[in-house]
Length: 219
Image 1 (tube, one colour):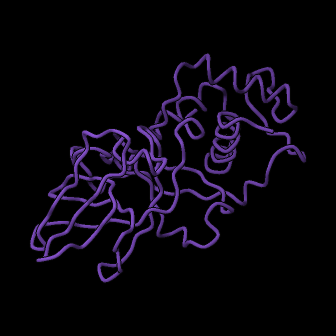
Image 2 (tube, rainbow, N blue to C red):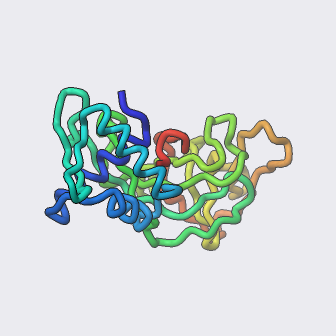
């Protein structure tokens, strides 16, 4: 069984080999991940992951330190992996984190996790804060959402909403007199609902589908 770090390196190696048509060194793997916005730590840490994969007979390196993948039954079929875009931070406290259309990177995810969803409609944001911790959305976790049209019924759904350029993850509820409530679900009593008028500029960017704890997706 591979750790999350080992899986990330294996998937990255496959992508580099397929796109750049050459076998990378550990340094190239490390820089590739940095360019994608992955918090990889030190080069030494990346080398240690590669060495662990060598001991599992999944990789080998030649005299020039170029890395080659050794396909065997111990590693899952990467044809089952797809990428989804990852956007900026979304607050799980007040609506503080700026959300724009720039993609910060991509998460590689098994299709088995999203059998009922269209991969083209999925995207992820990184949660900031603890106002949704009772929904098991923790500070720093990656949260996957599905894009929905404006006429979708968002009632009582966990959504990522963009309010005047700020993104927040909350439960959406329509109240009386044209009021929209975005409600936290937290063990921290400091968090309060956000109340909006239907005339306010609000974009519900997506509906919650799954949380990916940061411990399992960071290298």
